[in-house]
Length: 374
Image 1 (tube, helix red, strand yellow):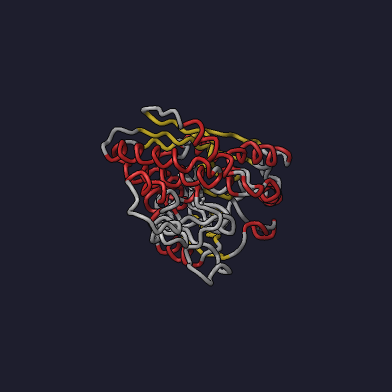
Image 2: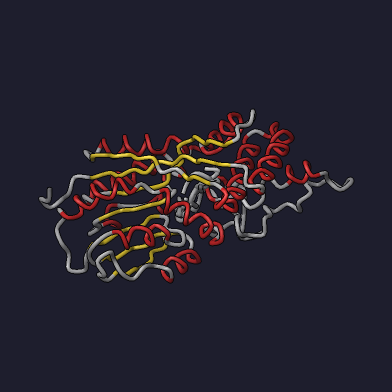
């Protein structure tokens, strides 16, 4: 969804709608925008004022726009993590040198869908591996990359036993503050959970940064990385000998019911947008699986789709705007038909007649432990 839990989330229409995206910052979830991921690449504007530097009229000084025209003009409003336009600047003029921000409002909106979508089937093999790692006096050390507002920790920490120390990484100090304040304080068995924050660029992640790590996590991150950056991440995890749980990467597939003739074309244009400037987009999981396997890791993947119905209408609306907006940014010739398409889809969503499945994939990489553990 996003985009971009990061958690950018997202950020699908994710990181764009779905990073995706898209708790991500410093980095993504997901589909829709990206989804929580690398904050230097794309920056969603959801929860912001809905503008991307334009006055809302695209220089049009004529009569008031029709409903269709208004829908078209708003294609780039409130884009979610995984689909935020590359030139979006939530900070406003003169602030492009500052780290882009994922709006906390968008990350909060997608957090329940992210939690429901993540693959619980990967938790048992993860727990088995963690049980075989050497114990530490301060408990399990978890590095959450592109943490956004910390949704990954809020989901995972209460599902694992034992004391935990979470190291939250992000480029945006604003989001790091939210993540630290909202972090869980106890594990599944009541053990203590502590946190610290680190501001930095994930593109320069080194094995030293993960020294002592027992687990690396990320949400809606992979799809807004390049192949080189994914290789760097895999190498760092392998050198640290720790498993990696990387959730809510966009899969490039969306199902909408009822179907519409433009669904396939919008999907294709959105996927092309995700791959712009060398980003992996829907190819991220395959690339990451190959990178980790090259370092001897055992890799498991599991579907983690958003299923958006009447109860998720607000998220579906924002995802739609971001998803269609990214498609139009990629293929401007779609602007007019996509405007009508968006208006129809938003009306169906408001009436409770639209169902959306945004496909993501969770990946668990069990790197070979160092220090003799098996």
